[in-house]
Amino acid sequence: MASNAPNAPVKVDDVSSLGQRWYVLIIMMLVYTISIADRYVLSTLLGPISKELNLTDTETAWLGLPLALFYVTMGIPLSWLCDRTNRRNLLAASVAVWSLMTAVTGYTRGYIDLLLARVGVGIGEAGGTPACNSIIADYFPADRRSMAMTVFALGAPIGAWLGSDIAGFVSTSHGWRAAFFVLGVPGIILALIIMVTIKEPKRGRLDVVTEDKAPTIMETLRFLWSQKSAVHAMTGSGLSAFWGWGLMWFTPLFMQRTYGMDEGEAGSMLGWIYLIGGIGASLLTAWVVARPTYTDPRKIARLLAVVTALATIPSFLAYYTRDLGVAQFMWWLFIPAIYFYIGPAFALCQNLAAPKMRAMAVAISLVIANVLNLIIAPTIVGGLSDFFDATGGGNADSLRLAQLILAPTGLWAAWHYWRAEKYIIEDQKRAIGYV
Image 1 (cartoon, rainbow, N blue to C red):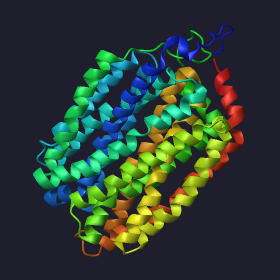
Image 2 (image 1 turned 60 degrees about the vertical axis):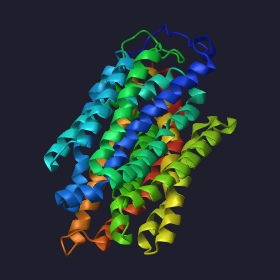
Image 3 (image 1 turned 90 degrees about the vertical axis):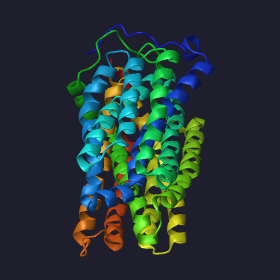
């Protein structure tokens, strides 16, 4: 679908002020914050929920299945819509839906009710991240997107802290249902702010684009599949999610079983690691990728490979040790690395896709990541834990062994980042020239 008359990109300062760009970026970050908090609250409260509902570890893992399935299945069509319609309106509606359903989760009375409420959360969240990514790309030029996406990624550690520390505190004080309500209401307010204060930017205004229609899903898939670096980068980010978030899904329950903590204590310990370590890692990433030498995408891919490989070591030791102090120290080393990859990986995905297929490319990347970290990883860990559990009543050692089997997969993610480096320059040129 080439065209001989591409539109020249405009200068970023001609279409938005610095203050406008950063306001939009902060709002997008808050959207991401709330979406992450709505996921972490369930992980934090697995202990009291599974106890009240008398669930096995496999059934506990399946609590994340409805969100994941509908997030994945609705992500592609909503991203298709995002590439063709008003992204601001779609984003506001998505935030309102998932936040309302998070609050509704607090009113459920059984396993099936809880699963159905999480379906609504998944449908809402499916339209959120692709819209955020696409809007940000039209406020920040290609050479600043790594920085912008890393700032956007700050929502992950802040959201994790809210969904861990605050949710755990509310649960121990007022019960686990109250925690869902407390974390759901702010998103409804944010949806109204988006509708009132954010303007829809012209699509692709900072890039060379044409007036041609956006590529179809199959055209996008074929193009991304032809980009070897995109395949490796998206696989690497998916495996990073599988490794990192897969381990962290059961970690609050692991801490409660192994060290006798309640959900408030476990949530507080992990929450502060998420907040301080995650923000520190994200800001360090933003500083690194903002340096002139890191406008070369090969260096970003190389950095992702090194950091992920090194962080695999503490990710294993955290579950191998039986000393809480050692485990906590290992989590301080391992957890920040989970956040380190988010911004650069999103930026690579953006820059390896043509301007009019970016939302779809992000959605495809998220499908890969969420199938791996929300469906496959928890199911594997929960299933292995039940398999190794001779008592059938929730065993700390069986869950430990399951986590240890998952931990080395960080090396697999690092290998894909390393392979992406080889092809990335040529593929980025192809993406820019695809009109």
